[in-house]
Length: 292
Image (cartoon, rainbow, N blue to C red):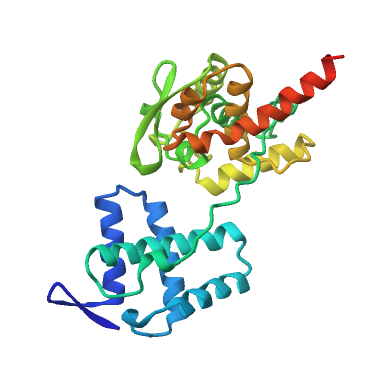
């Protein structure tokens, strides 16, 4: 599967590498996103089974779609794979590489589920849970408080360093490797300071295990899930639930949508608008309860 591009011979894998290099250098995509894109494109190569990339047609796209569904992927995951493939073919199209025209791949909008958030009594129960180990107990409470106070993503929290925490705000490296400042409440800051006072390691990572190693995304997710189960919360609680709770409470208390967008690090305000559906239901409940 070798092709000639700009007078040079490229294997199709080289084309994918050039595309990923473009996303990293020009578009400033994160390593996590690059891994996802690479995985999607390699999954498509499995469907091609060595077929010349110049000869692919819409039937190959249909086979790819079917293969993804056979693997058990949901609607959103299938759409994600197709969007990645479409963008790769657009990259080839712009560079005059002869292959299937990108606009022939039909994609649909994601069906966004309503955000799962906690009511204040549920959040209070979550914060009351303790671990039998003092260090873990104080650290885990600090994790939950910082997630709720800042509204940051779990991957952003995992990558935080001690020097990212300023007096009353935190410097977060978000999507697209863009930094933004988020604010931390006095209660969350005190909880964080208490945890840091117990640290004896030299690691610059903000949240670490007992042996000083940075906590990864998976471990933080396990901590939040475990605490939610101990608290008897029936909902499927994740670190993202605390981010949703942060945004929902801001909106309920009158914060303007553009401000919430900035605090969450959303590139588009349409992403932030999902919370208006949540608050609309909340206001309707208030109206039904108090209006006669």
